[in-house]
Each structure stands twice: as structure tokens, then as C-alpha cells.
Length: 307
Picture 1 (tube, one colour):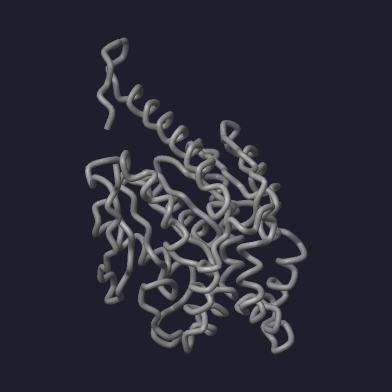
Picture 2: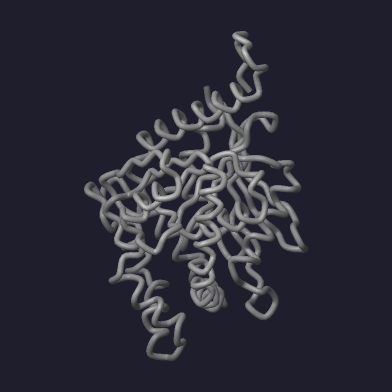
């Protein structure tokens, strides 16, 4: 049965926020948070595969995709501000509790939601979304952190290179065994949006804010220890940005974390959609069953109707 995916725009804090939405609004919610340099477009094929059972919401962050892109003088670009807008959208849509799928930039947004309002997160699916310094691949991050530590014309050159067509294409293809599985439409769309006038300043501002995500890690890891939130890692093991050590590290604070390393790279959905979908559906079904058992009266053997 085909599932309708709606493409909508809401106004949050005076800004237009584009989002994709599918599924029954009364079903358990799953929020999909994209990474750099993409948008909710990265979830275009995953959304229909989840929407028969879940209310799926995939927003474009401010400055990305089809959402508003105010200038750096008009909007305080940083991960706190991106989180504020994301939360505002979810509040409007009535998504009070949800499982969250994170990748790359989506991770620090979700981590802020989790540490601010831990009761909202029912489960985490992380696909190359880091929460530990072990996941940073040195060859990539040394250059970026040199820029964030000391923004000069010399260090900025590395950061600007990340916005170039060659590097955007590389993000999609690095670590992918069969590169013919990755549509060139992906990096072509991302590049067209990055090349909008003023978007380079947006991205450089977010790069400079990135160390604040690392500063959040100790608080986030305490949240993991306190909550023991169910977590599934479906990780491109060949990613040269966030390596597999980042996936394994979750078990330090979440011993029950489920980890699957996939033979692919940074944008694993492009080559491993079916495998990732299977892991997600199995994981969310188990999480849902555990929640229903906890809500059942003690000692009751009566079956609980699925939500």
C-alpha cells in the first residue's frame, strides 16, 4: 500500500520551516533530523517505509533545504538556535514524545532536546551521529577544528573547501563500496542550495559553533547513564568523518545499545536503505512492546493492543 508523504511549511518564530510528514498523527512519532550539507531530502525513501506504523516528521533546519535562510545578521546561527526552531515545529505538530533518527548535524540538535527535556525522547536511532570524541576521524576534523579554534584566512580555506562540489560529492561517496547506488541528484541538490548567496556565511558560522556540541558531550553522556534510553546505531563503518569508534562508544554509557556497522559511508541510507529500515522497524517494535508491558497492570496476562 502506498503512503502519502506531505510537503508542508509552518511558521516558527517568524521563520518558514519546511518539513515532510507522513503517517497517522495518532501513531507513535518518529522525528528524522538531517545532517550537513543536506536536508530532509536524505529521508525521501525512508519516510514511506516507516509511515504505515508511525507518524513521521522530517524538518529542514534553518539555512538548509527549503526552510528559510535568513542572513547571519538576521539570525543567530548556532546549534542552540537550530534546536529552538526544531522544538517549536514539533510543539506545533503536537509531537510531545517521539523516537528520533539523527545523522551528522541532526545529532547535536537531538542531544539538546534530550538534555533539555529528556521525557520527550522515547528512543534514539543514530546513523553516523556522534556523541563521543572517539568518533571524530582525525584527517577530517583536525582541519575543521583548526578553523574553529583560530578563524583566519588560512584556516578558513579548509572550512570553505567543505562547501565545494568535490567535497560535497565526496561526502556521499566516501566509503561506499558500490558507488553506482548513490544518485548524483543528492549532491547536485545540496550544492545548489549551498551556492545560494550568503549561504557560505551561514555554514561557516555553524562550523565555528561546532565545538559547543563537543562541550555538551559530558552532560549528554550523563543523560545516557541516567535514562538508559533505548539506542540503535546503524553506522556507515567506512565513514571518513565519523568513524565506527563513535558507534561503539555508546555502549560505555548505554550497555544495551544495539549497534550495526554497515559496509558503507557517511550517507548510509543511499546504499543500505532496506537493511537500515529493517533494523529500525525491529528496534522500534521492541521498544514499543517494552513500553506497553510497563504500562500493563502488574501480573496481567491480557494482551495489549498495539498503538
